[in-house]
Length: 211
Image 1: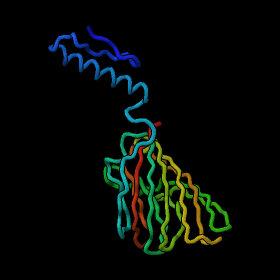
Image 2 (image 1 turned 135 degrees about the horizontal axis):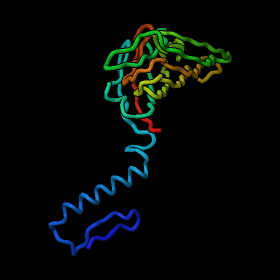
Image 3 (image 1 turned 120 degrees about the horizontal axis):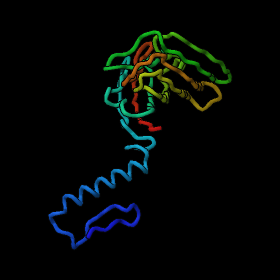
Image 4 (image 1 turned 180 degrees about the vertical axis):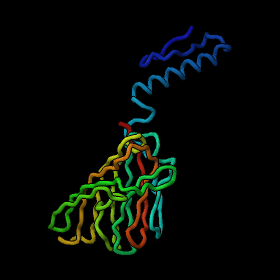
């Protein structure tokens, strides 16, 4: 006679059950575990899930994420770490079916701290998200991006942080905090980082966020 597990009450066979009933018992147990996990987590994968481990790019004018990466999650986090070959201020574009959207529907608002000076700048009807970073020399920099509703037929919005440390002195430091949106009710599945001039060398990592 079948019995149940002590915590979740999953039905499991006992040693006296007939062997011929084994397949049915396994199916019943598998369905019960699947249902319990989905209830406990609220989704197939809960929280933040690493989708792409560190992926390098070398001397490129742009770098695009594979279409298959940015699907199936409420939000995404992309961490770019890179150096520039010149005085470069990269921007971002969303993609659909491996094609960048260059329409004038990008807007952003940034708070900028350069050394001791603080300022702000905003854009609208731009062809990419700009003012997310400063023009930079060849030192290592970091751009952290969060995107929400990218896969929905609705406006995409997000946030980013950018930091550049050249040395440990009181000068030569930059920090940007930006909010941005793409005001088109279209589902997208990709993202491209584009150099304004020169090339970029570094890596990126991608996480999916359930919410």
